[in-house]
Amino acid sequence: MDPIVLALVLAAAILHASWNALVKSGGDPWVRLALANGVGSACAAAMVPFVGVPDAAAWPFILGSVAVHQVYFAFVALQYRFGDLSHVYPISRGTAPLLVAAMAYVFAGETLSPAGMAAVAIICAAILSLTFDRGWKIAPGKGTWFALGTSLTIAVYTLIDGLGGRSTADVVDYIVYMFLLNALPFGLLVTFMRRHVLAPTIRLHWKTGAIGGVLSYAAYGLVIWAMSLTPMTYVSALRETSVILAALIGTRMLKEPFGARRIAAACCVAAGVVLLQFSRG
Image (cartoon, rainbow, N blue to C red):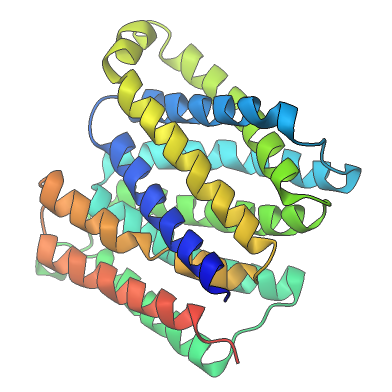
């Protein structure tokens, strides 16, 4: 991978873990996530005068991505409602590269080398360890299941956006218009769900929502751009090194339990995705 692309995807990983920590750090995760999405769309709206309209071939991908993202947002809010950041984030993000690898093989012809297959085994083992709690009993189920649902939607929209970004003459056009539309359905849903408490919640949490929106826009915009230049599997894998930062934030700043075990598992996930990143034969 080009060193500039490598550096920017690593930066995207840091930004992604940071905005997820903001969503988890307190208050209503539905409202915080809707706020972040709204700010992301506002950032895109500010870019509209400076970009072109995506090619016709890109619009099915844009609309498909927006649809899948709505399910993803719901899973993210639910996983943080029922699980710790240091538990659900590594599961949802660490599982996604495996699914992306499978989908990219089927739909885009991207393959894994033997080192890549070894990386898959490492990631699977590390993720399996994250599903256990003290005494190797299964950890609370809802957070785990919602995190796995999150990982599936991540894989689907990653595939859609990877192909969509390549379908238009300028990938920036795709990024801007996808983000422009992305917040509206989920924002309307949250407005209806939280209509009785929406105003006071926004007053309390608008700063973290705004910061999260800018971070999420920058993080995923960089990822879509990188996937237009580099195979999706490798971008997705490198992006998920964010699990280390998320585990550190969750156990050190949010005081979540089982810190040593979760950090160790997150580091194994990160080792696997780094090996996957550098496994191209």
